[in-house]
Length: 268
Ligand code: NAP
Image (tube, rainbow, N blue to C red; front, side, top):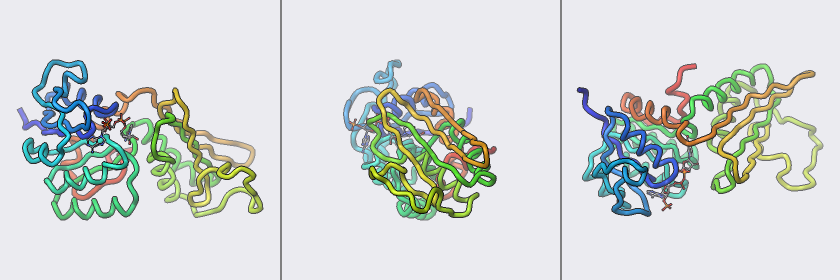
C-alpha cells in the first residue's frame, strides 16, 4: 500500500472542519494525525463527528501539534482572524497548507507564496472547493468576453464575517482577465442610499446578500442588447465541498509555491 498522506485539520471542531475530519477518516489513503481547535480541547476528533474513537484529540496548540504529528498537509477552515498566522506556521514546519478560510489580502498571498517557495513546498488557498462553483466562475469568465456588462450577486448566511465572499472576489478577478476595465451604468448615477449599487470592482458591481437560512449561492448576471444571461450556482450543504478538499490534499504535494484558487486544480 502507498504511504498514507498525514493530515492535520485546523478548525476541526468547526462546521467545515468536522466535515473534513469525517472525510479524512473515511479515506484509507489519508491519515488524520492532528486536530486543532479552540474549544473541545482533549475530545477525540472522531467522536466529535459521531465516529468511533481515532486516538487524535482536539488540541489548541498548533505549533506543538505540527511538531509532534509531522503532517504532510494542513487543512484550515478557521476564521479570517487566525488563518494567516496558521498558514505561516504550517509553512514554517514544512507542512503544505490547504486553506478554505477566506479573507486574505493579495499582499498576504504574495508573502505566503514566497515562504512556500523558500521551503520548497506547495500550498493552496481556495475560496471555494465546490466543482460546480469553479465551473460557474470559469463559465462567467468566458461569457464576459461577449457580455462585458455584468453584476455579481452572492448570497450567504447572515453570520458570515467577510464581504464580498472570497468566491465573488475570485470570480471578479477571472472576469477582469477577459474584459477591459469599463465603468458600467449611467455616469451621472447617484446613490440616494449609500451602498445601493454594491461594491465597485473594475467597473462592475458586486452585491452581498446576508440572510439566515441561506447557505452559499452566487449569480453572475450579464446584460446585452435585448437579452440577459444568468450563470448561477447553489450550494446546499458543507459535504458538497469535500470531494474538492480531498482532491486538493492529494494534489497540493505536486506543486511549488502558493496556488490561489481551486480552479488551477480543475481542468475545464
Ligand atoms: P466555523 O463553524 O465558525 O468554524 C471555524 C472553527 O475554527 C471554529 O470551531 C473555531 O473555534 C475554530 N478556530 C478559530 N480560530 C482558530 C485557531 N486559531 N486554531 C484552530 N481553530 C480555530 O466556520 P465554518 O463555517 O466552518 O467556516 C470556516 C471558514 O471556511 C470561513 O472563513 C468560511 O467562509 C470558509 N468556508 C470556505 C469554503 C470553501 O469552499 N473554501 C466553504 C465553506 C466555508 P471557536 O468556535 O472555538 O472559535
